[in-house]
Amino acid sequence: MWHWLLLLVGFGFSVAGGTVTITYLNLVPAGLTWVEFLLLIKSRPECYLFPVGMTVIVISLLFMKD
Image (cartoon, rainbow, N blue to C red; front, side):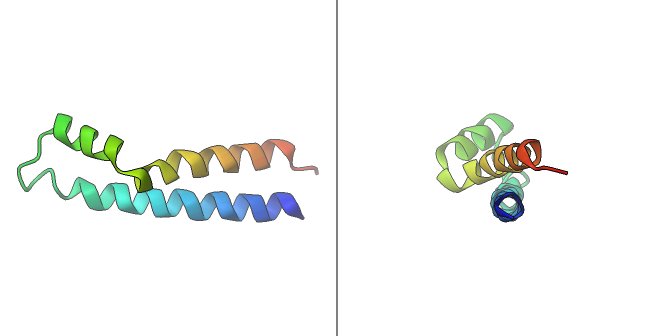
């Protein structure tokens, strides 16, 4: 049961982080270069939710029993 909860928490983190990253991607047509975009993503803590969420999902799936 805990693995399903961990899976859902990881899914929520990855959706939140992915949404914020896509939102910041809208700054590229406004004049931001790709290097500046990557530096912006690196400096924003909420963008780290996507890789953290994906890691939590993988860990919960690895430890989930049949």
